[in-house]
Amino acid sequence: MTKLFATRWALVATMMLLATPAISAQDDGAPPPSKPGKPINAGEVLSGELNTMKVRDVKNVGKRVAMYQITSEPRRLPPPSGLCNLETGPETFQLVPSGDAQAAQLKTFAGKEISVKVDEIACASDPGQMSEAVITKWSLIKKQ
Image (cartoon, rainbow, N blue to C red; front, side, top):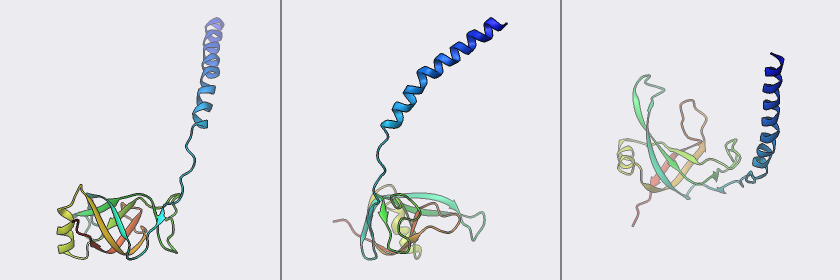
């Protein structure tokens, strides 16, 4: 019985000795921390892929509504929001349509690259928001 225990113990010890250098070698190759994204202010253009998701409406419990989100490079928001408690700034931006016309306009561009002129932007703060930042006032820029 002790011979079996000693054999298993030796096997585990050998595996640990072989695995430890491999683990430490992986840590050395880690990329350096990312730099914060470039700033975005009111009146500037944000470009990226438009995603559509169905989420449960917080106000009308149970009702599913479309949510639109642009995925872009990391951006810093104007003060006081800054980096939205992120290392590089937000990469996902929720577009809040001001009415049915803007919602219909976004629906046609789902899955495509779009550009919007940002008028009001802030960090996400409400429960149920799926993005890191929220653009409440915006206008779609037509591609030529």
